[in-house]
Image 1 (tube, rainbow, N blue to C red):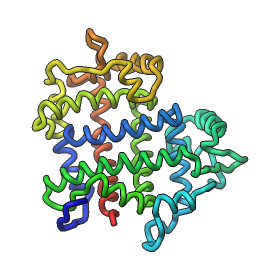
Image 2: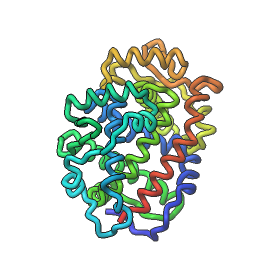
Image 3: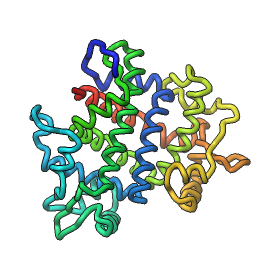
Image 4: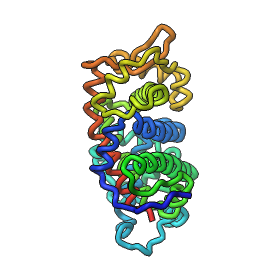
Length: 328
């Protein structure tokens, strides 16, 4: 069920403006679905780099098998048709360097992780070919997770955006899930494009994706407290967001066990990665061994994370615009 209004083309620059002006309020919604997606990948692959190698391969398959995905309006893009057509697709003339360059991973790392993926039939390597059996239940989980988190985020944003800009349509999550299943091939393409850009951006900054996920959980926890306790103050620009976080009184952090349980990352690994975050002053630990993000101006956190925010907002804005403009 959705509220009918005059449908207008969504422009990424207008969406970007809304995201920038309501940074904490809306980024809580994005962080929620992003950590949910990343954690689901950890639980499937036990390694986010492996997971994104698989996503990259799927995107390459798009380029070879869905050339007419945008131009052919009569094309059946449903999830069921997608899986049927995609079964045992392969990439010809596969090169390690393609993945290495796209994902900012060393060639030897890519070679080793593809070998590990091959053991579990996530990717089947035969000479210079990579074969993906999308009838594998693992891929069904990825597809269903994508539909769930995308529909959740787009629904929340559509409601906020319409009530801020007074245009467009307010979509429920149920309505969007139905639309995305019927037009899956198109919307999954948009999602993959965004995810691979997001991965590369953070890979360049922090190198280790487990560290990125742990940091995101700490950030989400802090941002959520601001949105919950002071909702009006959460509707501020990202330039003012750091100062707002530093004013939090008695903010409660997360413990190692909670981070491990939420993320799917083993507790010993979380402890090891947290040491890096503490050394870089990206997070801080209180007397109860609870971890929160560092909020002091001029901190390493401020320089590294806030340098990335404009690019992240731009990528999210483009993803939202193209997704909403292709809802049929």
